[in-house]
Amino acid sequence: MREIVTLACSECKRRNYTTTRNKKNQSTKLELKKYCPFDRKHTLHKETK
Image (cartoon, rainbow, N blue to C red):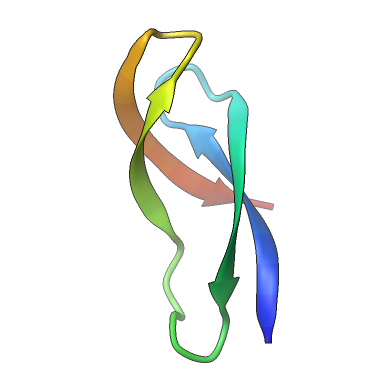
């Protein structure tokens, strides 16, 4: 049931990370604070297609 999702930086819009999430347990889009190597700081990364 886990699917692979891509996380994109909310500031520079680049796709930096991939992770998995369970579709049954989590219906909302995933949002995590991750390090963006292009901005050189921690930013909010949101799930994209």
